[in-house]
Image 1: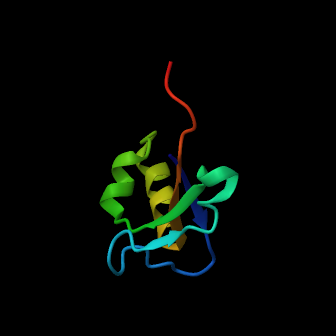
Image 2 (image 1 turned 60 degrees about the vertical axis):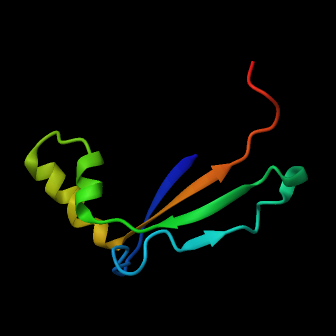
Image 3 (image 1 turned 30 degrees about the vertical axis):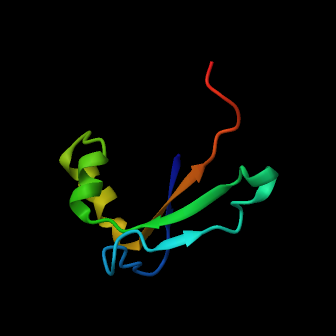
Length: 84
């Protein structure tokens, strides 16, 4: 799994609506069915605040102030083969 956060000029309202309702399966069947899915995530400020480093209060506030314009996704991949 990998995660990605994008920043936009407009407010994304990522906290609005049902959680985990967006999925892109366009790439799921590539490479013999071992492709990947892209899933959108809903999040709230508490979830993000807990995962950020806190070098100091001011820097944390600056980073948190931009999350209204952010949107996040995860990529889910399928393994090929067996673990050794």
